[in-house]
Image (cartoon, rainbow, N blue to C red; front, side, top):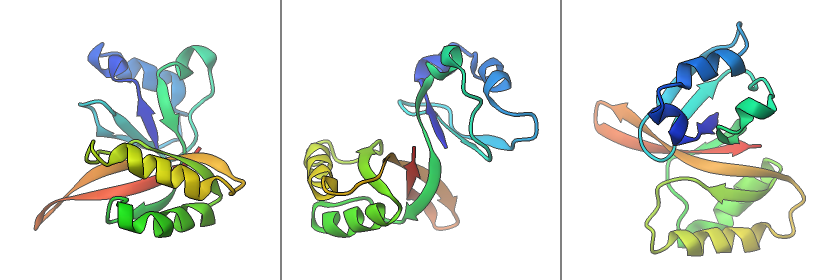
Length: 142
């Protein structure tokens, strides 16, 4: 999963960029094209190129999904499950209440401080269900 710079999408050049970073035999789909965090899901890692990677905000392999956002009372459970996936530093790139987002980020940083592991990030993806829209929280290992 890759979060791309919204300027790439606003310029209309995302398809030309895709032709350069996606292997011919890879599957991909845009999960979100609008907003602050345009997201692309793909089956293989992107082709690494200095001039093209400038449009990548974050990219990683999906290692976990959660049905609930991280909350102050669930920090220890969230940190534990993230650590089990080999992640020692997580960046929250999901829509959370701005009043608690910094506190949740700080508490996760503190919980994971002793964990040796990779960097990771968490995003939210809206899924359309017959019962309405549901958010899925996806953890990616960079």
